[in-house]
Length: 268
Image: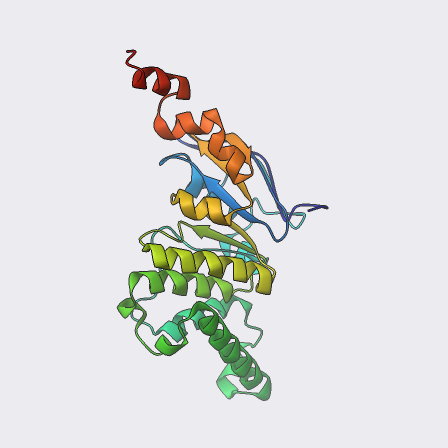
C-alpha cells in the first residue's frame, strides 16, 4: 500500500506521574489495512487508543490522521473527523433499545438544527428517515435486526460486543479502533467476528486497528502487528514473523527462548 498512511504516529510518549506508559512510539497504518496492536497486560495498548482518540494528552510526539494533527483536539472532534472506537469494557446504554443505541451514534453528525427539529421541517424529516434507514443497515450487518426493539442490556454478551461496534459505525468512521473485540466470546462467535471485521473492511472501505489477547484471532485476521512491552515497541511486521520474534517470545513468556530450552534440558 502506497502513499501517506491514514494514521501516522511518531515519537508518541505518555507519562502518568513517574510512570512512562508509552515511550517514543512509532506507528503507521495504511488505508484499508487490518492492523493489530498486541502485548502483555500493562504494555500500554489501551493508553495508545486513549491517546489517539483525545482522551489522554501525550507528553510529546505527533499523531496525524489523514495528514491532520490530532493532538489538542477534543474526543468528539476527533470522532467527527472519522476515527471511532469501542472499549475493552462494554459501554452501551443498557436501558435503551438496540436500535436507540445505534441512533445515538448518529448524534454528532446531525445537520438539522433545533428549530427544524421542533417544527419537524421537511429537511429534518428527510434526515430522520435517512438515519433510520442507515441504522437498520448497520443492524442487518451486525446480525441484530431481529433484536432492534429489545433492551440492549438483555442481549447476550457477544451480541453486546457487536452492538458496540455497530454504534461506532454510526459515526461513519474511516478508521475503526477495536479494543479487545473478541473478549468473552466463544470460538464460534470469535470466528464469526473475524469474518465480520473483514467484511467491514471490504464493504465499508474501513481501516481497522485492534487490540486483542486472543492470538489465534489476531494471527488469522491481522495483516500487520505492532507489539508493545512496557510502553515500547519491540516488534513490528507480518503475524508469522512477529510470532517467531525472540523479543516477543520473551515478553510473553517472561524468559528468553534460550533460557526456556536450557531449563527443558535440565539446566538450572
